[in-house]
Image (cartoon, rainbow, N blue to C red; front, side, top):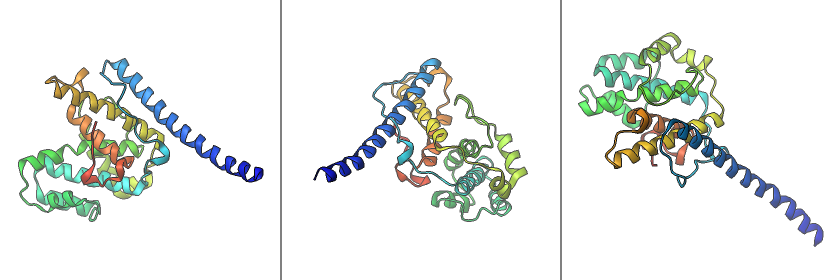
Length: 235
């Protein structure tokens, strides 16, 4: 009986240690984010929870992230220009058939989308920016107080194409993705809190950029295992 107890104890202790370690990891990530926000003068609240630790997050593969970047770029171009023929040509150019979600495909199939749809999809350039950062193409995610460099995105995709992205990309570590997701989650809380109080976003944050970045990062880490069309950005 004593030997059996010892065996069971040996099995239980590593599990407990792992649970503690993941909890500590998530708390440390939150602490780093809060420290950065406070250094910028961005409001925070202590009871905003941690995001999932690495052990329970979803790791995307490089191919899927490249396809997401290409799809987002194409819908953003159509959103910006309203040019249906150009959108169809880009699908052919980048071999992007099958890259789109149901909502994206409906937009791409619509020869005369609404102004609101065009505006919504134009914002997806910010998602492309996040994907290119995740793939190591963009060196850093700068503070979300300005829109991304759209000409850089266009030139990068034009020069590399889908195959070039596949060959040259290297998906960042899951810890890096989670760090960015946690920080952006807390930026978004500050933006939403300001809106609820009838105030402008704090310290010059761009609410559209913050929202789109939060959306893209939640997909990257597999938040609630949601498909792209259904991503939650709750705060």
